[in-house]
Length: 459
Image 1 (spheres, one colour):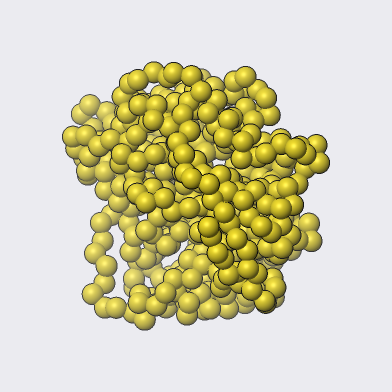
Image 2 (cartoon, rainbow, N blue to C red):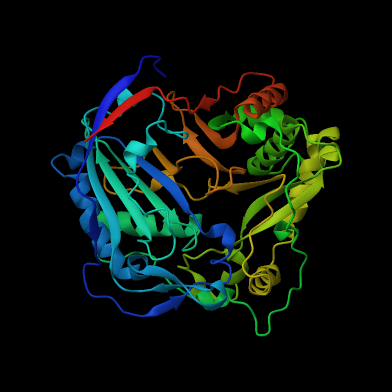
């Protein structure tokens, strides 16, 4: 990344509301009891980056994406509505057809001039997604905020806020694929969206049948540590195949065939806990996002096309002393065991738990969350300009909770495929985390920090 600041201007057009291309049903649709839990009531910023494509010369990506978005909303018409809150904090979508917020923009530089910053953390992200007043709200706000920014090279960037209450990463990919298909000239999406939120509603009467350690309400400690009052920094770490192989050598033979995701998750939990310097007896949690769709599709064929939230926070628990005093194999065993607990009955129990416990928040004290975005393949979303340079989350964290991260596939400037881990920690803890990770990998991981090398001006 260049050490000298890059001055560039992003000129935004007036925000507009994109409506469905044809009239859509006016109705109320209840969200599931998985959807409307407190821990999902926030926006996830996502970003998709595309290079110049000679076959699309003369076509304006802002116009193409605006028009195809309107056509897509005919099929995904709940996204053109507004979320309402009812009795017992129950959320629902009022399908009003009011549309989504859309902003066209143009930047006076090329993508190449942005250097190697085309991955999280994006130091210029605030220029790529305008913070429309009130857009951070979940209730009574547009469900989508989208900005499409053209660059001088013919490339463009799509940035958006996705309200997690409406759907998970799989749901976002399904919507993006549908939008891309319409942009390429399709008359309807190849996968028809289905609502079916009733499959993840609480039973009547609700009954909790599983142990949900992920939702234990724990009070934070009274003592204030230095890292609690220092600014949070964003930083990404990269794992090449050789790094994964090195981690694999550190686990017992019977675990050596586990996935790269599990290996990185164990490594992240171990290094983060050591970096936090917790008391040995303090309890720590690693919560892995487990996609539960396969548990339902086997029994409900109509579940194909479901774009709501269908996952659980599987919680692995131990103490800081045990985690840091054992090998990575110890953490790996706990993580794998917790993931195996997620069944269809477990998901039903979560829905019942939410109704009984008033849609409570997941445990935040000494907790971290990780989600596997490698299978989503966001880079493959093709609006006609080919595969993206990058596709996925814009940063680590999840709404107000900084302890969340994602494993994202990424191709670096040399064309090497690797797995990226964007995380949030206070600056001093981040330094200790990087040191711990370097000791495991035996070499520099070459992290990318969110120190802004860009000076921006907007009109």
